[in-house]
Amino acid sequence: MAARPKITKVEVVVNIASGGVDAGAPDEIAALLSEWGVQANVCAPEGADLTRCLRDAIDAAPDAVLVLAGDGTARAAAELAGPDGPLIAPLPGGTMNMLPHAVYGVTPWQDALKTILEDGREQVIGGGEIEGRTFLVAAILGSPALWAPAREAVRDGRLRLAFAHAQRAWSRAFSGRLRYALDGGPRGKAEALTFLCPLASKAMSSDEQALEAAAIDPRNFVDVARMGFASLVDDWRNDPAVEVRSCRSAGVWAAGRIPAVLDGEPARLAATARVTWRPKVARILAPPPEAVQETRP
Image 1 (cartoon, rainbow, N blue to C red):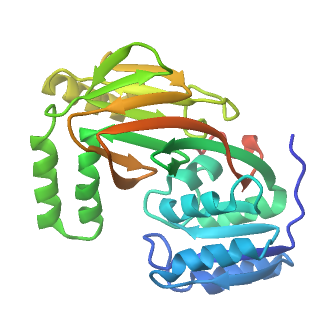
Image 2 (image 1 turned 90 degrees about the vertical axis):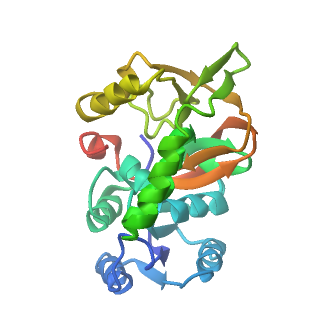
């Protein structure tokens, strides 16, 4: 088991514009850290200053950088720190919180912070990379990713726009299948591909050095409906329309640009993309595995 790192000096980055952070969070996290005798510098920037704040926090070479924000900010912090930079603690402050939930379980950021201050451990995490963009939890490629803009519009309360995005996503279902090859193997076709990192995979251990790849190939809307029901009552990977295996690299290509969602954030890839496994992306401050085993999503 990894030794407990010494945490006395930390930098804190709070994105007050993310979906799960209120205006009082910067003062609250500073007060909580002070109770534990931790010297903290808290930065709560606005707009474009967020990246500068992350860089300044990492350049300060603290024992750890606590990030209270959404998945995109947490991923950016991990990329900036790299495997040789300070420890990163991605606390849940967004709307989806895919990375924080994978690391700390489904728990409020205050509880996650208390857990790592009491018994935090260093954990090296790997991730996937597509066209120079890193994902630490999951990537979705193909037409299902077109539903991401509709989801974001619903979150913003823009229901008319959400409906328009949903119509577009539905109209493009089954219209642009992907071609793929995993680890240089035989070529296949699928409606969508997902790549899960070990942190999020139910089938892989957290220290396994590969991605869990799933080719989703529903042949009609009956298959889609069945998979939708399975996602509510069972693991959708067990559906006969899904083929799952591990891989370290994958080639993906399509007739046009490929819609994608990387750790919950919409993206648009080129018509040809390469997915690769990176074994060491960053070091994170995580609780012991047994502390979150029953609360991970």
